[in-house]
Image (cartoon, rainbow, N blue to C red):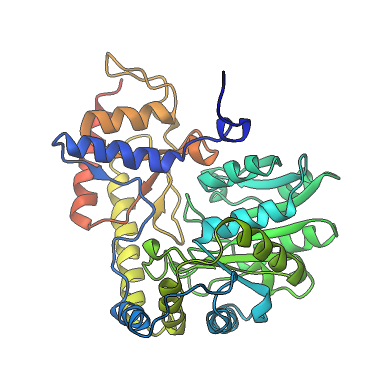
Length: 400
């Protein structure tokens, strides 16, 4: 007898979390594991934010809050959207959630009926497909390769639209590729979606502040499409606040109210203390805050170092990521090769081979809808990156 629901049985475990767990198990056995699978800045939350959280405890911000978050936090989010993105929202269009992942899930669950189609450019973040499963939606994947800088075109999106299409869901800067859509690329996509009154856009901008090309561009900036865009953001990546669990949306009022209704029956609001800390974080202008400027500069240096190191490994094909903290090389050159005992059939096999052989944890591109690639996170020190690539190179050299 199957005691679990069909809903949970069809849900897959997060491949990124699974690799992190594998790393911990090997570390517990005494191995020196270099974990390049995790999507978390290796920096600490800015001191000014931590001090504000401590003050919030002393000031007794320890009670229930409105489901969508404190009013002054939602006002701060509105101010952030205006300052950083030139987007105009009112507080009742903001919903604060337990991380951007919950924000994404709230929107999909509020919009999608069984059989509705969601266009998802691939590579995509690992949880997109599982969230869509929970909503009984039908994902329609469109693929961009490394030769396209992993960015789909407006023409590709237009070709994927059917009468069942309800949503376009994508991230920029992108996890897992680090690719960033330009203003012109976003405008061309917006013009396609604007032709279809029943399609919304879910824009995941959680990596907004880790951007190496200048100003971040939001697809909601275009007047002709802004009422059909739900913008998701948060403080996990840009402010090194992953454990605080704060994400948020700026959305048309009807969608914001729906997300509030759903969240009110599942989790209610996120931690009151984390909300107070987020107010202080959002007051920090990313272009003027030293901790954020230094973090982005460090990530840029690591990106350049990693790309330079990877050039010495035969067969890897990379682009130059413009944001986030990942490199996503095409590794298909190694498919069919073997070290004499283990055959590499796909990216899953290659990542398994590498962690077992040289104790470097990576994530297969299959988790992100791109089975020819693997994701390398450079959210670690330069010394560890150098050692990791040295080990990877050694392991791959044994494949013939």
